[in-house]
Length: 105
Image (cartoon, rainbow, N blue to C red; front, top):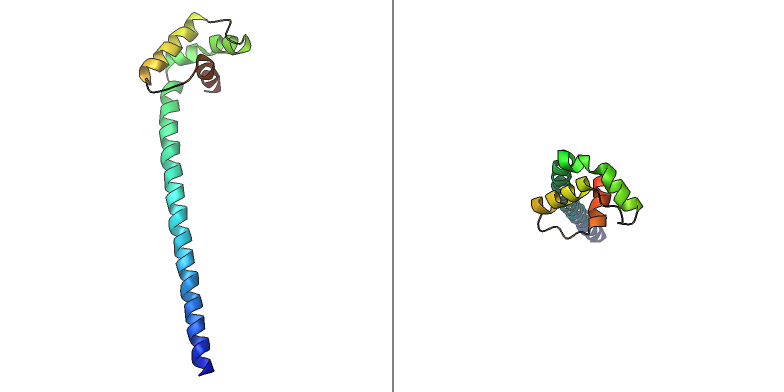
């Protein structure tokens, strides 16, 4: 009788461990999949800006703008800001944030 109870307890313990491992794998796969999708979307957005000649040409103006706390606004930066806002109208970013993003590219 004791052997049967030990066998039953061992079986339940084994099933519990398997269920927890499966749950962990499913959760991990979901998180990794979501992270990969976010990274791909972000990469696509920054790649298109990074490859854009107008935005790349505005790096010096963006540096001056950031260094002067917005007092120096070059023509190339103004063109790049207008271009970015035209390409991504849903983007809610200040001129300073966009200039910093241009510098980060």
